Each structure stands twice: as C-alpha cells, then as structure tokens.
Image (cartoon, rainbow, N blue to C red; front, side, top):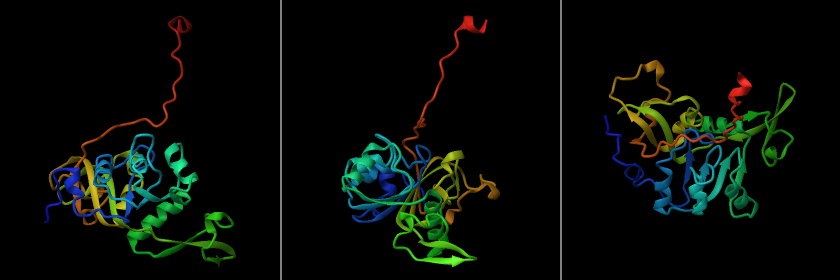
Length: 240
C-alpha cells in the first residue's frame, strides 16, 4: 500500500499547485474547512485560481485568506453570505463569480466524481441561473441542463483517517467534503486524528480510501461559532 501520510500541510501540497488551477475546498460556513491547507496555498503564491466551494470563509478565516491575497480569480459557489471581502471584490469586478443554487452545486460536484458529464434539474428554470443553458421538456415540465464540476485538486477536512485514506467525518463537517473528495484529480485530506488500519467498521466509512491521495494531521482545529445568539440570564430574585 502506498504511503499516503505526509509530515506537514506544506509537504502534502508539494508538487500539486500551479497558477490557473481549479481547487475544490470543503466546508459549510465555518464547519469542515481545510484550515491547515489553505494557509499553505497562500504561502505558495499561486494565483489566478478558480475555487469551488459553498462559500468563501469568513473575515480572517478559511478561503478569506486567499481572497485577501488576491490569489482567487473566480469563485464557483452558492453563498456570498456575510463575507464583505467576497462581496466587495465581486461588486467591483475584481472577482468572477459563478453563483449556483446550493443543491445544484452539490449535484454538480457529485456528478463530477461519478463521471456524469451533465444532468437536468428544474431548479433555476426561468431565472438568470438558466441563461445560456440548454433546456428540455420531461413529462410536460421544463428542465435546465447543468454540467459536472471537477478539479485539479480537492482539499478536504475530515475527523479521522486510517493509513489507507478511509475517512470519517463528524456531524456538520460531513457537508461538501465527501463529494469533493471524489471529484478532484488529486485529493489532499487534513484530519484531526490518524488511526491504525483496521480501526474502522467498514459500514462506518464515509469516504473510501481509493479517493484519497494524501493525508496530513491538521495543525489548526479551531471550533468557531458563526453566529452566537444568547439571552440575558434571569436574575436570581426573578427566579425565586
């Protein structure tokens, strides 16, 4: 079995980065982002990147770092959200944006991993989403044709991996990561824990190791809260 475990995030990305490449980056909001790999992409200086990701991080976090360094030329995503840097670069024309309905984005990625070049969906019919795309009628309903998404590199965040690259994700981090792992020409995974071979029950593996090329232990495992909503604690006398 080839050795898939690398000693550092920088080593795990060695030889796979180049200008103009397409990168898929897992994550949903602040959950499941490849936090250790993104800074190394920034440090490499590669530019004119096309990045496929649900969103582009938050202020000072995740893909925001590559926006701030102006290394991303185009985003393919479904949510601009409250990332002011993402918003301002798009509105100024500095950043190209291909905005997708969220389910369509997920299916385009899944299709790329499954070898399905195109599929039809009702989502977006009659809106700007469908402009310039072929449509077809099925059972009296109009559908728009969407194409697969594939990448030169997928960077993934998982909870646990074994030496063969079998992966387990934890809760919300199991978002776009499993599908993106299948759609990259090379898939690099950072994990919180590497366990011995044979640890996983085969039925509990979320992503089989055949899709994983390189594994590295995370150097950053920050558990952020995107929106913290609280209410004042009642005074003791009010509860008496």
